[in-house]
Length: 387
Image 1 (cartoon, rainbow, N blue to C red):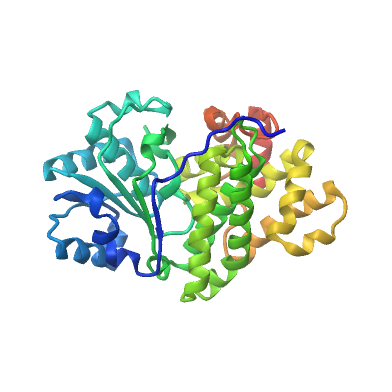
Image 2 (image 1 turned 180 degrees about the vertical axis):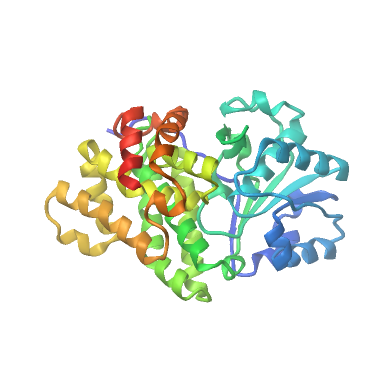
């Protein structure tokens, strides 16, 4: 019997090579006279946003820009971006870049549109709104932020906090595979594995809202990601592979936006927050070890996914054996893609593990969705296995 569930996603999605160069047409009803772009210095230095700017200027829009977004954006950065958008008199917000830029853009649209205090919006369903019109344009194939109602910010030195609300879903998501052609191999690999984690955790989530729509999207995401990630990493100019990765990332984002992620992300956050390891790589470092931990209760679920991502695993007959092979193959894939596979390779030592385990336990919003209950001791042992 199928239980009750809800499913929400972005209002409109455009997927097209060159879509960024037609932004003024695709987003005409949302922009207003004074749109405001939120992005990062790397995007500006590469000029990736130039087609968007030209499109908007050609239709008479006056564009403002905040381009100081950094990975794991701190709370003060949100304040600065909101101030800059307010001074411009922003009529809409355009997030352009990786997950951090999109997450910042979501909060700028919310806080500028509503005037509410960010400290009152943390958590699930606490944002009040309204927000300014919001357009999100990803330049990486990983976070799926363009279709998720989530924004993750670093508070204090290393604590990750999230605002989760349907208000953060954009009016328009623009997916242009050409924007991802210049991604370095290690970024393509890490963000691609991140998208895989989204699909895997969404499919296996213990959330009461885990549903057939999310599970179907997760499976389709894994098919696309598995079929294209190596080509995208090793043949970066392959537009077909880039498109497959971007679409797979979006489908995985839709899945976990409604059937939330769990312990892989919870254990990844201290790695990123404290040691400034990119989010996708943080997930990759703990992924096989969390799956091995979960196999006690989730072997059947992972055995279902195994041949979706690795078709030859259909020949492994036992459920437990196939689930175990799935975890090991994922570890092997990250290594094949050129990513680090051990915490020690990113500067983490055994002395760091107790605090990391304690910090991971703060991620109650995520841990509640894990198929197997996880204690601080379990988190420590997972980190130890990943060291």
